[in-house]
Amino acid sequence: MVSTELYPHPLDPLSAQELKDVVQHARNVWKLDHRHLFAMVQLHEPSKEIVNNWKDSDPVQRAAKITLWNSSTSTVIEAVITVEGKEISFTEIPGAKSPILSTESEKAIKAAKADKRIIAALKDRGVEDINQVHMETWPIGAQIPKELDDGRRLIWTPMWQRPTEFANLYAHPINGLHAIVDLDSGEVVSVENTEIIPIPQTPGPYRENQTGANIKLKDLAIVQSEGPSFSVEGWKVNWERWNLRVGFCQREGLVIHDVKFKDQDKERKIAHRLSIAELVIPYGDPSQGAYRKNAFDTGEFGLGNYTNSLTLGCDCLGEIVYLDAAVTTPDGSIKEIPNAICVHEEDNGILWKHVDADGHTEVRRGRRFVVSSIVTVNNYEYGYFWYFYQDGSIEFEAKLTGIVLTVADAIGKDHPSATELEPGLWAPYHQHILCARLDLDIDGEQNSVLEVESFAHPQGDKNPYGGAYETKETLLSKEKDSQRVIDPFSGRYWKIVNQQVKNHMDHPVGYKLIPGHTTFPLALPESTIGKKAGFMYKHLWVTKNSDSEKYPAGDYPFQHPGGAGLPEWTKANRNIENEDVVLWYVFGTNHIPRTEDWPVMPVEKTGFHLKPSGFFARSPGIDVAPSKPSCH
Ligand code: NI
Image 1 (cartoon, rainbow, N blue to C red):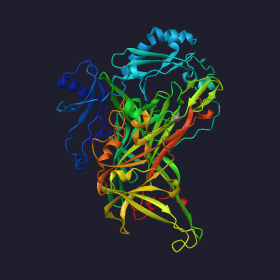
Image 2: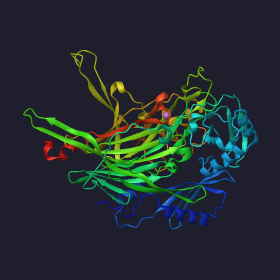
Image 3: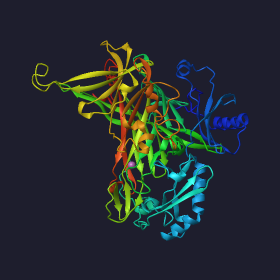
Image 4: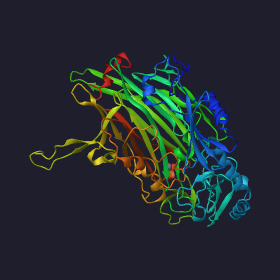
């Protein structure tokens, strides 16, 4: 039986009521007014020590970390206050700039749409009705025009036309026209009106009532007649031998906390906190309207704000439990997101099988437990899926779908950094680069990281037949040693071990991080995006855990000159051997759009796998019972 009763826990996300309370208290305590915008309100996560020592009956001090944007002084304030209204801290952050806030975007679009220069330029492009124009507000992810580069917060507005009410607007990009808007004053400070290219007219229908969508299969129902095999207590979930806590925050969206696995009679800790701490999308097209599109969807927008409400039988199939989330809006009101996170189990094919020499067969079906959520950021959808398996492994998969971003250019032109999808409709090349922050605690906090590679000696004594190979392990003992890239040729992977805890073979227990499909940034390191997202030039970083180091491009990437986050912190070159360490794994896709990515891109996947490696004495899958008596 699934319980949805709420038990308070220090890591539970702030509820809608708690958010309401902290906003009210913050206003009273710090005398906030309409000039103070609530950029982010997130759980002030208690320290690891508090979480690890917390007992069910302990009183919980719940507090919020509030990021305020004082629009009159252009100042970021970080404040911490308890849900009862007790002030903990109130600190101005010099030089920081707030992420883009939804109310500011709305104001900017309104101003741009009312601007006479924009209206006239649209007429020159054949658009008479401003209501047909869809504008988005994007950070300027490249050099800001020099005359405007005086420290103010600016956005620019790519535009599309929606010629009929339900048309796919991304089929009709408007070229060579943008407003640049000062986010704080709400004024259009520049209008860029350059080349006029005819608006591509081939529609990109994808709605069922437009396409007919008549390829049908017979119904597939997932029936769990005895109910699901997991239980939910508030934000804690138990499934098979796993238990973990689901979390949610406005910046990162879905978070996983406190992951444990029951090995025989012992509950063993594997991870303290797992999240996707940044998602940046550098665009590789130098044409106007594309070279600036280098958005940090997590750090410049707050991914949690864009979380979908999921629908049973559509987004998730089977016996589902949904968890609801809530976020604050810039004016301090609360937006509830019902069905924000889906938890369910899935059949995962064969877990293992063997037919013995005597003909006896043992086969086990595998199942996996899934915690997922999906966000929509303008044209794109990102699904974050965490999988927990019966072999003791954990996998993360990002599912990328939605509509590729489009620009217009002359039909058939030589346009080398984009794919022409329809006549005059171009999809620029781009990369989706994610960074996972993995605070693993393998049987405790004191862990070390090894790089493992396979290699062959030259033919000779150590390799008499030429086919021999060995592995070598290199301890990454300092932060600078740990900045590594993948190497499929040597089968490179990284192993996080606890040297204090030995397995039955007297080796340190560990988990290995196995790279999956990934990419490497093409943007030059000296480019604006290269400097701002310096973390993306290494696939692996290891740092000594610090509560203040959460985001790999720094806390405030919006218009940051660059160098913040991982490149800055690791200058200290701290010891990471037998320490509480955090692994940062950078991965993603290099998206060269295909005509088949249009009009809505089928899901693309990228991710990584964490597998026990010397953690268990044998396969945890052996203890899984056959699904039917006839399966052995
Ligand atoms: Ni893409």
